[in-house]
Length: 145
Image (cartoon, rainbow, N blue to C red; front, top):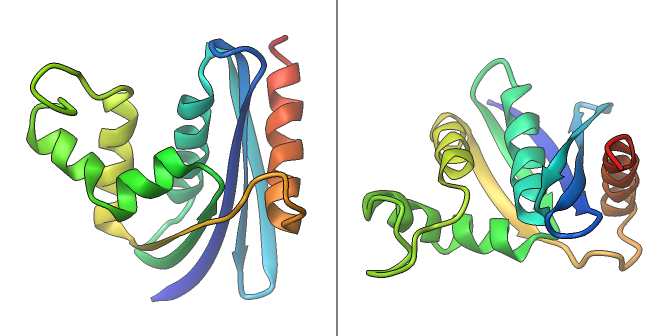
């Protein structure tokens, strides 16, 4: 399996508000930057979108090391929350629906294709790729402001 590093970040001006996401994919010394956004969204939706769009770029099953500053994304994947939400009909518990079920469903399907290791990085702490993804996400969000 090809080994890929993916770095992602999401940004939102207001929550909800105009938002953007950015990702850097690295394979064998080569890098690709991608970004996008929406006019009316949330920070968590943009964090999820960055991961989904980056994994969607991969043309074959890969071993992926995913770096994100989103505890929402990292914990839901690493601790199995998202799989539990899906198994419970997209409910977090007996009363509360899970947010963003359509995005989580896409992400879980992609994680079934790829071998994904999730690593949380502290945001806005000088991590070069995280800062780069933040710049991509903010620039994409500004297109909708």
